[in-house]
Amino acid sequence: MWFTAVHGSQHSGTPAADLAEVAHLRRTLSVSGRRAAPPAPDPVRRSSEKKTKPMTADIATAPTPLTLDRLAALTAEVAEEVRRGLHEIRFDAENRWSVRLHADDHTDVWLISWTPDQSTRLHDHAGSLGALTVVAGELVERYWAGRLRERTLADGGGGRFPLGHVHDVVNASGAPAVSVHAYSPPLTAMHYYEVGGDGALRRTDSVLTTDPEPGAPTLDGVPAREGVR
Ligand SMILES: [Fe+2]
Image 1 (tube, rainbow, N blue to C red):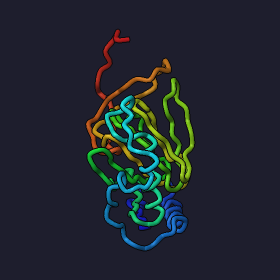
Image 2: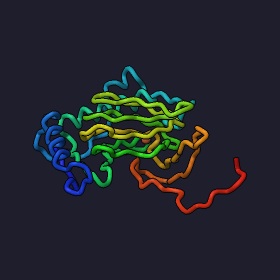
Image 3: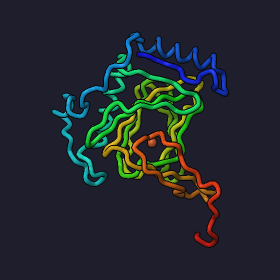
């Protein structure tokens, strides 16, 4: 594993502690000292799992030949590559760091790092299914199920995101975290949401993006229209 802390000295928290945690992660994840290997060959087709879990289309959920099970198996597989030190990881306390490890017509796979308190906003993945596996550390997922619910995803754990899954992910721990994410079809857009004072979920904005870490837009300065609801 090849960890690099970026902008660590500018983190508003305790940079020395963060760097110590990064060093701890290096030890925990069997640091190899090697630089990152080139992106892995097509992980969708190389797994022996396809013998038992064919890439059966789930046409009820998305226009993709991959199922949520297959996506989750893929993120678990790539997470193991990360643990083996095959991919470089960086940490950036100012802007959440991510890198695309793989892309083909049906799937893209991302490696994302989280310093303490880094988070997304409430969002969905538009027309893409998604899955994630936590490689190191701990993440909290807040997801919409009629109201906001919360679950903790720890090392080796993860989540599967069907169409319409609205969630926010945050590193609420005091230590850095690392996760692998996959989307199918490859991510092309994200929608952002907020929970109103009435407890209802409301879409606030959308972006066309192939990056799961875009700068989330805001509606600041956009006047509200009276009498819509
Ligand atoms: Fe997400």
